[in-house]
Amino acid sequence: MIRSAQPGPDDPTRTPSSDSFESAELRRSGDGLSSSQKLMILVLSMTLYGVGDIVASVLPEISVGPLELGVSYFSFIAVVLAALLNPVWVALGAPLGELVFSDMLLGDFAGLSELEGYLETALAIYIAGVIVRDPCRRAQLALACVTMVLIDKVSGGIIDIVKVAVGIDPETLEESDGLFSAFVIAEGLDIIVTVAFSGVLFGILPAIWLAPRLYGKIEPIMGLRPRDPAAPPRLRGPGGIGFWLVAVFAVVAAAAIALLAAWEEFVGKQGLSTIGSFELGADGQPGFGLLAVFGAVVVALGIIIVLAVASKRRRRSVGEGEGQR
Image 1 (cartoon, rainbow, N blue to C red):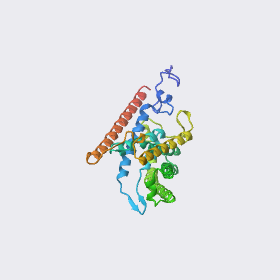
Image 2 (image 1 turned 60 degrees about the horizontal axis):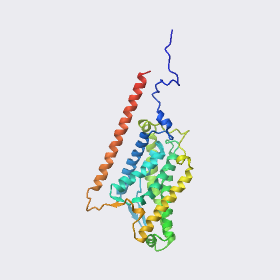
Image 3 (image 1 turned 180 degrees about the vertical axis):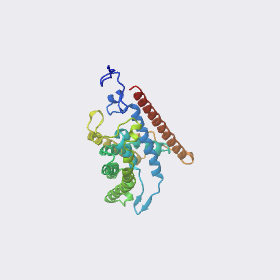
Image 4 (image 1 turned 45 degrees about the horizontal axis):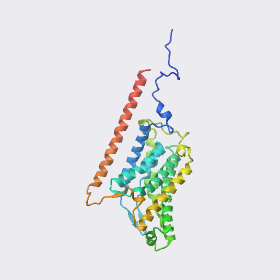
């Protein structure tokens, strides 16, 4: 009985197996992602986090003495996405969504000075995403949510304290009756409130419920492998540069941008920090808020279409692979 020749594993004519997620393009990529996958992660994180930031901004705040109890942002959106997908591209996309949806589309964009918040948030999301080795481990998800909020708020608080210390933000000090220690205490209380609301109530609680249920379900749709707890992402800088060197540079750059913006406001002139800034008044643009919502819906529909097309191509490639066996 003569058996037909079967292509070996090194045969160039061999058809990829149905459970293979890697192509030649992916293997050549440094992070194992194709350009289309990077774009999908970027747009998905940008849209979800941006729309979430709009919702958080319209939630009412409660004033208790000098404290304002409210939600700064929904940290669970960024943490869940960074825990399931590539944390680098989630970190780049999520704060960009805040700029596009909460600032640009709503007509209140501060220009170059917005880079301060972008760098702080991107750094916080990336570190939080790397902390989660296994998206099904609730302790890791909880630590990631708290870490994200702490890095974001502590870095911003230190920069605010420096601005007051060097004397270019005297109005903030006057609000604390001229006591620098009172201002520092107020910053610390603000961090505690943000951790409680954005880190725990709208961070840990939704994340520990949502991430395990999405793990292994959303990644194959985008052509990605679910995160392997034995080989999680590591803290790495671009081009082989040490991560902590990049992190220090990002914080210093954010501080420099914030100090420049505060100094220009203090001396009463516009400069580099206001490049690209614009503000649309409610009188001239009565329907701009609706435009923001419409833009968010359009982008969300675009993501759904991209994912549907990718899923269809995936099923078709699997069917062709099985048909050639």
